[in-house]
Image (cartoon, rainbow, N blue to C red):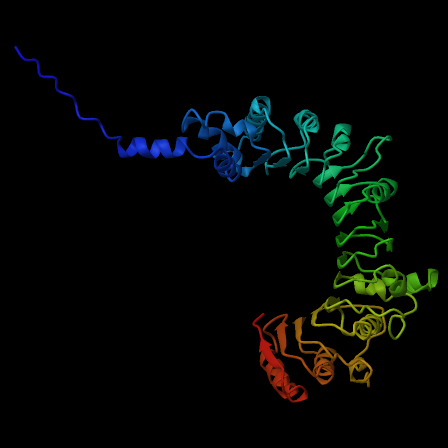
Length: 431
């Protein structure tokens, strides 16, 4: 009797199994990179992919809770709030690794007291980046434990009330500070900026409580501000190279000149020796025009190569301040002028300012110019002609009017001006 042993052919793995294996066998650092690019909702759901992926999300260092956390919409604000709070509580409870970034930015989340608990939780980790954007409700006051996070490199607050504890000594490692729609006192703001010795970027928008801005930051390189204030000055800012500053309210130069005849221009630039890019927005040029305006700055801005100015071309004092700036930037490469016409003004009007002989304002390096928001009035056209006549290497002039009214006449005038600079290309953009 013979016994025949038959072996079953080995079963090849199905395509589905192979795909599953590829997911399971991904290197750990690749899984971490994948999870870091997913919304937190999808990162948590990745646990079902395989045993290796289970709770892998619990070690991701960057936690972002924004509008992608919830995949549904509801008119019941209380329901959304409770759902979001439960999600964040669940994630923080199960998280078992270091947290380097915590971002809270959901459009329907108020400044609830639950945030205090979350900040306390992350403050016990080596947190490096905190972003709190409270889109609804009253100003949220962060708890004192936030100011104990000495590893912070980036702090971003939106719609917050800042009251650090009395023992707060600053953030020694903070490099970027972004404050928008905040309430902060004068003393707290000055102490906060000056006690962050590593600060390189400072953004301040729509603030209350500070009227006199004193910026004392030895390593500051970037400064962007927009709001209502009375004065601004820089101390110990030799590395500051990018400044964008907007004053959101009109000012009366006659009233201010009666109180203070000192030069705002001279004081503004005295501690900006290496500025490379300057944007003067809203009514800030009117501020710079207060007091004595020299024909040019005593220390020229030799590093400044990009200048943007919002100006009322019919305002004599603003034109004088703008001319001072233009004369003080011998290496200017790009210039942007944004017209800000005023319907009524008590200031002296100037219709012939740019017709005068400003021969000392030769722009030896100016290559790109953009003039926006003009309506074709004489003062605006005189400025364009002045630029074309004094810019021997100009390559491109871009003009964008405020409206279509008088568009044809403006185009004809620009074509006539081309004779003043035969090498420049004139580009006309529709309003």
